[in-house]
Image 1 (tube, rainbow, N blue to C red):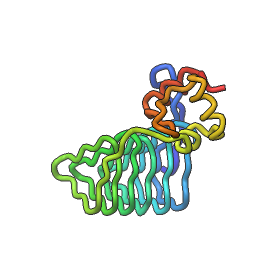
Image 2 (image 1 turned 180 degrees about the vertical axis):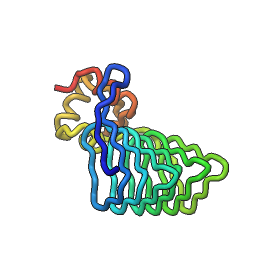
Image 3 (image 1 turned 120 degrees about the horizontal axis):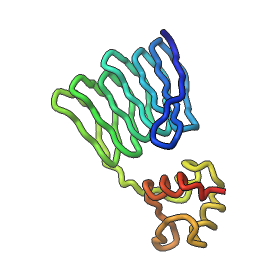
Image 4 (image 1 turned 30 degrees about the horizontal axis):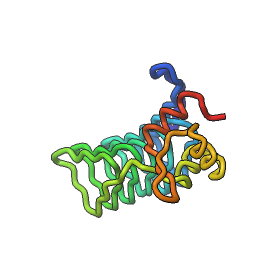
Length: 172
């Protein structure tokens, strides 16, 4: 069985569930929120919003950037989890990791550097995250239409507040 894509209901929002059970390579970017289950060999880069679960028998040679990452298999590469990273007891990770929330379960093996991220975004990061022009983000912040906090000459945004704001349909 190779790549399986199906729609599943989760709360009130549709979410794409993708199961990858065959070897793949390349640069993969998911623009929509996805729930990816990787159960095979993958080489390249993965970028996504949502959840990535690396299965116990999966082997990834990849740099990973996304919201939530759960690793039960092997990963050689850097992992940036914007919300949470969990290394399960069978996980073997060789690379640098960064996340605002980290759970390394007893038995997991990790070799690399760890950076605990603040869950704050600047205007450029919000612009990339929401795919909205930076000038428009700044105008929304200055008018109070997007939740943010001015710090000197710059703006800081909490990711959870931006997620809530975006899901409420306030994006034009």
